[in-house]
Each structure stands twice: as structure tokens, then as C-alpha cells.
Image (cartoon, helix red, strand yellow):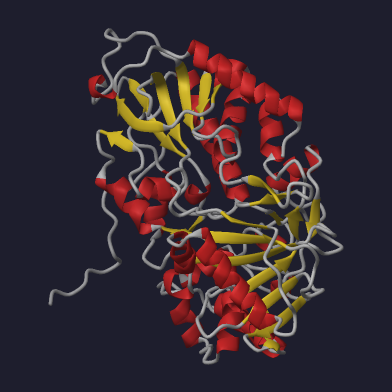
Length: 526
């Protein structure tokens, strides 16, 4: 939770914006294209930044540093942070701030190498983090109680190493992509037991938010490597310093201001009241050679020379924002070719701790992905005495529980816990909470993932601007760091620099795109 003075200042900013907003225009009267300059000469800003997450705030900061201060961040929620979302959890007299979305600084810095910019911000704003030991501090269970399948966990690490190495740079490089499931099979990993499947889930799904069947073999070798056990692997842009990564550290935020404090406090260092509109949801984005017009759900119109969309990939895929004219087919194809994973944290607070003393636990159910990963926040290195236990589900199982009531999900979770600890009388939790990321129209998922059908040309098209006036940035548009906070940061930085050049130069062509993405060779006609 952010400190009171800053919270109050944001609330006052919101009041100021309500007073200074343009007259509301009924949506039915909103034009379908941006009028000519002679029709509407006044601009509200040179740049409208749509979304106040990491990409949006860093793009704004970059414009500010480049001397472009005539911009407005338009944010649908009451606060900045995007998918860095905190929640006050627990009994009224025993509450803690927990993270519903982004939680880790993934990679810090090695020696004189490059530094993860999220780590730099965390240090700058004194965000409290703790090392999180995924693999060397774990207990294992099934529906009969504690059972040792550590050998399966170790085997899953070795299988993932083979998967990565088979597509990396230190062996003959693969030129054709397949799914990670195909890669697993070809490299000899065929998990047959529930223990092997749970271990594979922990190694793969828990990181990607999707299954091996939904993930590119090549991209899983590029980016998402978990923990120190995989130091020997190359081509890793987040962790491996030899491949341009930061370090092998994973730091878990336990800051009681919320992890989002690092971006809120950064915004506070340069934003002025007239550069931020909170509680403002975008309904329509119209663009032409004359500029961009954004219509909010309350009918308010905002005009600018440029609009930068930092919406999540899931929002773009679900058409939660309308574009006029419709986005070109090359852009829509790129948007729908990438995948959006869902990662759901389920929090429970109990009067006292009854569970494992390790940081992590893995549960092997007969159904793959059914409440498999558990983390103790009531741990000496986390939030001792909190009574908080955290379970995680992903992908289709996340979507499944979002369709259920809280009561039904809680009942399922307690059933699993009681099977894991059959000799313990487990009481009703003092508090229970999870966020529905997939069905939330402001997010539609947790973070992006690269499927086997997503080509490099698609990635370039996803990142590219549409004509001169409409731009895009976010973790999904980052080639090296998609799915990570530092991917959102790097894209906000790069696109912010490009937009600053456009504004100061009086225009620009923007980024290259490919009108038609083709296979290397055509498929034969049937």
C-alpha cells in the first residue's frame, strides 16, 4: 500500500481532472475519424499515453526527459501500476499487503554487467524484497499426504535443460519451431505419472502461465529460465549474463506499500496534475493523418498528435477497445497470433500455521494443474506470523475457477489442503481471496507468451505503429523480455524515445512492418 501523502495526492489529482475535463460529448455524436486540423485546431496533448502501467509510466518519463512535457497518461483504474496490483489481505486486525499480479524482480545484476531496470527502481524506492528459493526449499505431497517425489522434480529440471539446450546456440541451431511439448518428446521427456506431470508443471507452466502444448520450443529457450539450476544454458536474455541477461536471482516483494510503489514513486518524481487522468476508461481510439482522438466511456474526447496504446495483449485480443478505422489485417493477425497466459494466486489466512516449513510445496493431483503449487508466506524469510498460505494455478484451470463462485473455489482448495494434511484439523480460513485476471476487461490475462505459430515477423508487426499516429508498447511487444516487467520497461523506454523524436521533428514514419507474413515454403494443396 502506498503511503498516505501520495495516495491523497493522487486522489486530489483525480478531483482536479474531473473539474478540468472537457465537456462530455454523447458517444452517439462521436465522429468515426479524426476531423481535419481546421475543424478542431486545439489539441489536449501532443501525446496521449493510454494505460498507467510500467510501459506507460516509463514512456511518459522518457518523453519528460527528452523535453516533451505536453502529454497525458489516461488510466482506467484509481491508481498507477497496471498489473502490479496489491491487496490488503487478512482479518481486520491482522492484515498484510499481498501481490495479486507481478511479484518478483527476475534477475538483478552480475558484476559490472547490465542491471535489470526493475531492480534499479526497487533499490531507488527502497522496495523490500527477499530471495525466493524455488527448487532447493520445497516439500512434496499427493492426496494421501506427504510423499517424496523429489527425484521427479530433479528429473523435470534435467528435462527442461535438454529442451533448452536442444534449441540453443551452443548446439546446431534449430531453424524450424515446434511446440515445447514436441521438444520435450524429442528430447526424451514423456511424463507418465502424476508426480512427473506435477514436476513438469512446476518447471514449465508455473513460469509461462501456459502449457508446453501452447508454447514455442524456441522461445522457451530464449527467455524463461528458472533458477540457478540452469546456469549452463545459453541464449537467455533475462538471467544468463553470458547471453546479455542480468543474473540468476529471483527476488520476491514483501513491501507493505505494495510492489507497485516502485512505479508510483517514479511517476511522482516527474508527473504534474495535468499530465494524469485516473478513473478514465478508453472506449474508442480514432486516428488519421491529422492525429488521434480518444473517446472515454463517459463520452469525454481527448485529442492529440499521437496516441500510445499500452493495453495488455489480452485487451487487444478481446476487442475491449474499439479502433476506428479498424486495425489493418497485419496488425490484427499479429495480435491474435500471440498467446496471453493467466496466472492466478489464491490467498488463504489461517489462525495459525499448520503446513510445511519449506518455502514451497508441490502437490501431485491426478488432474494436471489442479492446485499444484503452494508457497508459505508465513515463513521466516517472508511474512512470519502472517498465517498466509498462497496457492497458484495457471492457464485453462485459472479460467475454470474464474467461472466458479468464491465459495466453490475455497471449498476445492480446502479439500486439497485436507488431503495434503490428513492428520490435521484444518479450520475455515480467516480470509480468502483471488483475482479474476482473465475476465477483467482491463487485463484479460496476466502476461504474454510466445506460441509455436508466432513468427518473428508477427512480433515485429505486434510492435509496429499503425501509420504515423497510433503506437503500441508493453511487455508483449518486447522481443527479448516478453512476459516480464523489465520487458514493459524497455518498451516504454524505446517507444518513448521514438515518439519524442517524432514530436520534436514534426513527424516520423515509425517502425517497419510486414504486410503479409508467409511460411518459408507454401503448403501443398490438398
